[in-house]
Length: 490
Ligand code: BES
Ligand code: ZN
Ligand code: ZN
Image (tube, rainbow, N blue to C red; front, side, top):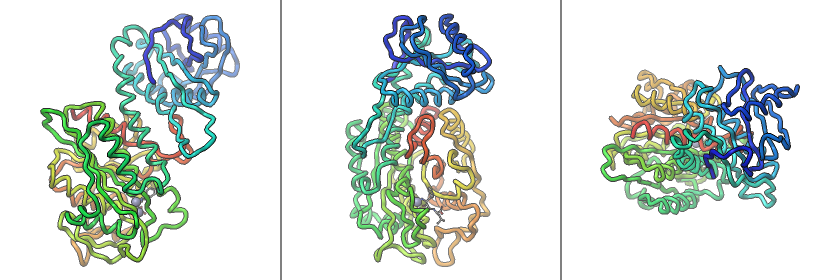
């Protein structure tokens, strides 16, 4: 879908060319381009401010029938993400107009202070992701995605960066997959339905994949995970996906919270709280979809995806507040609140993969706490890790991919808050403050000496309104972040 081209604008048969325009300076080397920009800027209604745009039709200097000038603000404030957003907006708008192709002009290397690779990557990502729409369950879908998205680059950029479109497609295909899963209604993604989809995709990508059934989970004593699924007629399972390259020296595990619907259980959520709880498997979606991307990227490290899947429902067979269960690790847990279920399934998944594979590094992603949203809002994920180096790599990847992360602490003395009078630990803290932290500290108890980070994605996993390059629903948060991180560690 994505292509780099050096084609002459006078000859290109594309329907629309998009030209990013800075408010205060020229961005392009091409004289013809700069001169048509001047024409556009002469018009009162176009200045080049961010989100400012104008379409001019039938310009004699170029062949495409539409030239879409899109403002991108002041040069000093430009970031690669500005191009990601611009591309997303442009693709969405062209698709709405019923067009089928688009050509983006890339600013000149010399005129930007950012490196071309970061700008082009972001530009490609915005275009690919803006072209995705979730309309599977609608009969009338009048908007169709664009068929061909091209980027006008210099011959030297094409030579140097011609591999980028393929790489961006591999990563963004994962993001789109995760989005679709998160947006999918919960009756269509019960643990068994979801696991079947994952298995069939994983097999296509030649990944090793196994599913532990409820029976096996019971035999293997996944007591904490099973306590969460006890109230549901939909049986739990756990998917393990493995990418094993020859000669790998390191193994990274990616564990994702997969609660396909979180009703809260016996501690039933309010009507407001229930709304949107189909998204409580966004960590699992990010982990499974990242594995599909990893299979295409082929890094040198071994990567394992661990995906516990459950539905959290109230019923006569559900776990109750006060219950004490034995987790996979052997530690006992007192259930203080059945709505703090994410940590219960994660500790069994973490303990299992540590025992089975002893990975060098574990990342878990989870829509774990409302408290993390209170702290960081809906666009930024919370990162917890005792390892400064890993935390800083994650923050850096967050900046590069615009999947923003902010580190929060794991204070030793807060462990006091998750002590139980009757069991080894309690899933509910004794204070209502610092809920994202106490949830992370709970997980930390089960990670032993493994280098580990926990990313709370409760805020950024879902968008009600949509963004410049994402429709309403799942955002696919975590896939770009994880793929970038793998590159750093590889
Ligand atoms: N899935 C929720 C967290 C969540 C809330 C995700 C809102 C996305 C949006 C989680 O299982 C939960 O219910 N957490 C409780 C924990 C509490 C009972 C200690 C919470 O955050 O209120
Ligand atoms: Zn919950
Ligand atoms: Zn939950």
